[in-house]
Amino acid sequence: MKSNLTQNLSSTYLTLPSVLYREAFIEPLEGAHYIAHNPQLLESMHLAWDEAHMVALCNGTIKPQGIAMAYAGHQFGYFVPQLGDGRALHLGTHRGVHLQIKGAGRTYFSRNGDGKAVLRSSIREYLASQAMLGLGIASTDALALIGSVHPVRRESIERGAIVLRAARSWIRFGSFEYLNAHGHPEVMRTLARRVIEESYPHLLESSDPYYALLDAIIERTALMIAQWQGVGFVHGVMNTDNFSIAGDTIDYGPYAFMDGFDKNYVCNHTDTEGRYSYANQPMVAQWNIDKLAIALSPLLEYSRGQTLARSFMPRFHTMYETVMRAKLGLEIAHEEDGALVRWLLGILHKERIDWNVFWYRLSHYAGDRSALMEIVIDREALGAWMDSYDVRLTLESRPPQERLAAMQKTNPKYILKNYMLQEVIDAATQGDFSLVWQLQALAQRPFDAHPDMERYAHPTPLEYRHFELSCSS
Ligand code: AMP
Ligand code: MG
Image 1 (tube, rainbow, N blue to C red):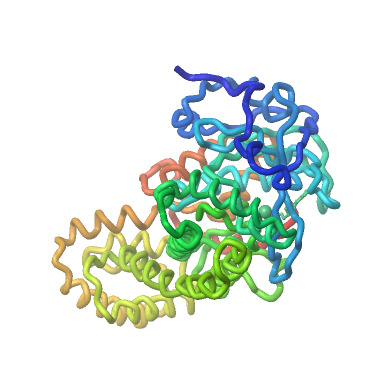
Image 2 (cartoon, rainbow, N blue to C red):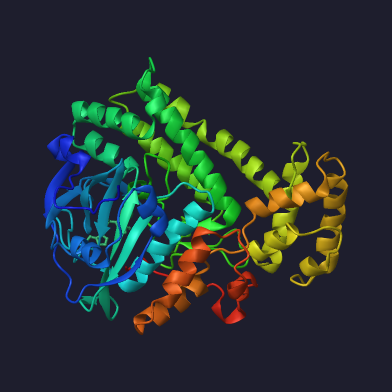
């Protein structure tokens, strides 16, 4: 039996100690209207679809209040003791999924912000979270996207929008940093228990639960970052408040799925030092894990926490090797594989070769190199690498057809490049939302052929490459 979300919807976070949240009220948007929804997620949550009902829910007509969570965070290296949901409001928990509206208006934690989100950034978040899940990478999800005619001031006047986000957890590294900074060790214990119940139930019986928890967070985070690197995803704002305790990708801002491969790529133009560049992501994740281990020191002896935290990088490396081997179609591990990957990345980086197109074409390579050679200038360099790759393939025991089939399940045909998102945003700004739906289908099933969208499987048109984004959203 499918149901509607009603005014009885309540957040299980309300049963946490009250220092962790504040009551918040939805500030309705003028002229709120439906843009898109996610049938797949609705289905898995056993929810009925009713467009008008969903708009009313997001805009405060059905249930005007919810809660905003408190958290702290290291932003670009600097500790901010209080951040919190400045524009997100938790509506309630349904079948273990926490529903949150982003862009709902001002909360206790808004500081100087207006509590709003604009259409362009809401479209980007709505589609990216689904794309991440479509790629098999842990992420928050999105249930619906609502537009409005509500004026919102950014660099210019834009329109307000709301994403109804969904996640198995919204607890952040910064949630623990908040409790540590404000001296709440008992609340921290309660929160850690809740995180275990909610996101790591297999640890419930552990004799050393907080150690086991940090260990499991490290494991999931290492996998997430390895997978980001594999698909060429750059998060852009890897502050500890944007790191999920459940190891999910959260808070999509000025992110990018890379066009041409540039290991030093920075997608957020306000990040002038390149702190959150593609190549830095694993090191930043290690840095964030270190901060989490410090924050957990009331529960976990400091030196044990620090020693455990240091296991992040070796674990990341192992997972990264596994990810890259799978991309190359290698089933058997050989010591020289790392060198083969580095050699290839050097070639791709030098020419800024389209990351996704290269891997997609490699996943169809059965002796004829022309499709790959077509996208490089220095054919000699790639040819030498391909000779080595051919030799390496002879060490594999899996039949070539099976190898290619496996590669095609790990190298997507489509990724959500920024220029594609910009096309959707431009059309949506003119009132045409059909591309949102089309890209949603692509995002959810990036390994499928989608013949009607073939143009997105080509290298990014030159005029769109390295298109810059800011944090303003
Ligand atoms: P972000 O970088 O988007 O994850 O946001 C960092 C912090 O700023 C979080 O505490 C947000 O809730 C807050 N924030 C961002 N934009 C706004 C806004 N327009 N109004 C209020 N708070 C905001
Ligand atoms: Mg954030």
